[in-house]
Image 1 (cartoon, protein in one colour):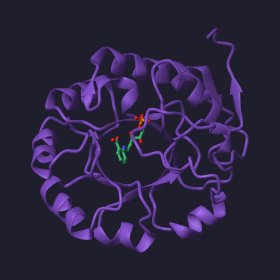
Image 2: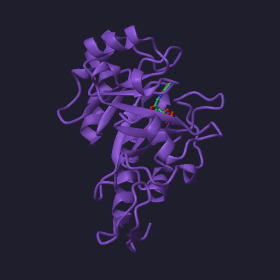
Image 3: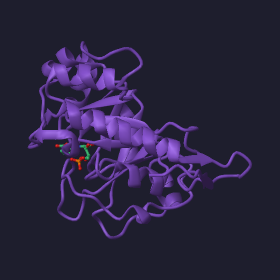
Length: 238
Ligand SMILES: O=C(O)c1ccccc1NCC(=O)[C@H](O)[C@H](O)COP(=O)(O)O
C-alpha cells in the first residue's frame, strides 16, 4: 500500500501515564501503545490501560502490545481495554494473532539476520493490517532504543509499513525520508525514563515528521511500489 499523501502516521508507545496519553492526542499522534509484554519496564496492567484510554481523544487509536502472551491474557486485555489494534512482537503466528477479532500489527524483528522477503512475510501473516519493522530480534527486545539499517526493509510490501526502533526527534526526519513509511513508532526516543514521556521531545518528534512530509512529495504519475515511493524531493532546505 502506498504511503498516504503528505502525512506519515505517528504512534507513541509504552504509555504509563494518562497525562502523556492526553498530550500525545493533543500533539497529533495517530495512536498510542500500551505494553503488556512481561518484563517490559513499560508494562501496564489492563485496568491501568483502561483508565488511560479515557484520556484518549477521538480519532486516536489505542494499540495493545504483546510478546508471546498467553491467549487468555490477550482476551482479558481486549475485554477490558477495547483496543482498536493489537500488536504482536513475538513468535505468534497468523492464526493466533487474528483470533481475537481485532485488527493486528505484526512486528518484524530486524535484529534477526534471516528476514523474510516481502512475499514470504505477507504469506506468513495474510491477516496482518500492517507490518512494524523494529530493531528487536537476535537477542534484543522491543522498546530497545536502538536503530536498524532501514535499507533492509524489504521492497514490494503491499501492506502498510511502519518503522520503529531507536527513533527520536534527532533521526526521524531521515527515517521518514529514507523509507517513506505509512507510519513511525517510538518509545525510548521521546522519554526521560522508561515509560515516562518527555513532552518537549514528543512535540519535536511530531514537528520533525511533519517537516519530513513537507520535504518529499509523491510523484502522482508514478506507479509507486509500497514502501519505496517514487517521489520527487522538493527543494526545501533541510
Ligand atoms: O516498549 C517496550 O518496552 C516493549 C517491550 C517488549 C515488546 C515490545 C515493546 N515495545 C513495542 C514498541 O512498539 C516500541 O515502540 C518499539 O519497539 C520501539 O521502541 P524504541 O526503540 O524504544 O523506540
